[in-house]
Amino acid sequence: MKKISLIVPCFNEEDTVEAFYHKAIEVWQKLDQYEMEIVYVDDGSKDRTLQKIEMLHEKDHRVKCTSFSRNFGKEAAIFAGLHHVTGDAAVVVDVDLQHPLEKIPEMASLWEQGYEVVEGVKEDRGTEKRIHKGFANLFYSWISKLAGLDMKNSSDFKLLDRKVIEALKAFREKTPFFRALSFWVGFKSIAVSYTVEERSAGATKWSTKALVKYAFRNLISFTYAPLYMIAVLGVLVILFGVVLGVDALVTYLNGTAQGGYPTLLFVILLSTGAIIFSLGIMSIYIAKIYEEIKGRPQYIVGKMID
Ligand code: UDP
Ligand code: MG
Image 1 (cartoon, protein in one colour):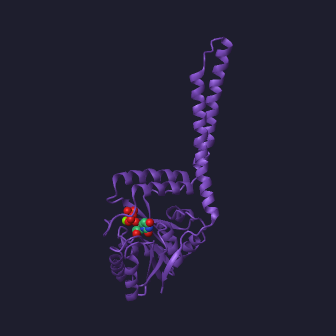
Image 2 (image 1 turned 45 degrees about the horizontal axis):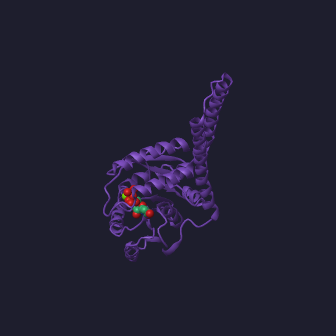
């Protein structure tokens, strides 16, 4: 009998872990040709999330958990889940029921047809704040263009075949971007659209600040475009310098040259600005290299429930 595992990242989700479990059991009535496994990843929750998961595990040993020593973020949680699962396929899904579990039978039948990645694509971004929606659109159109991947409305809700799980487990990046990597690894994939549901309980774990940070982090990890932009900026500054230089020479030879203090100030400020800006971008990448080279683990496991 084939097994499908669910990878469920949880951060302070004491109000939702049980509802998720019951929903999964309900959906599995239509999927009884498969074994099931729920791998919760407790991402350093400060509330009773872990106790709730332990209670579920006592009742039902198909419930498992990797619990982090502190909060390492959703990406790390997803990767920990990939390392923990034993299924022939795994579905990454949010615990708050915003990703409809009812879609899993459809995803599973596509998997049976030979698709190795079944991407959940958001039909509607639900009740996200307008600023989040606008920002998300901007971010995905940008990263899709820069990284050459079409990721519009993509989400972390995906079914992955064992082959894909193994490919992702081989990654050694410290700050992986799961959503894009599942495109990057290739494989036979297909999209399934779904409507984002209301959160079952509790509040979103993402602040606007956290989302902006997340977007920058992923942009830096997926594209070198800002570095190339430095080169373009350099060329522009040189062209500008040539134009001003020619002008200065001509007026000097004409004898019409004026005291050039404002021009001088302007040119100096402009070029120093360009240099500092470029150094800034390079520093961001250097920091990133430093972070990777330190070789710290992506997450630390505090407790395993198997
Ligand atoms: N999550 C996590 N670690 C974090 C933040 C969130 O594991 O640091 C989990 C969270 O418990 C949920 C999923 O990631 O299962 C999506 O989070 P949330 O619902 O807060 O985000 P939103 O749906 O608003 O994008
Ligand atoms: Mg949510």
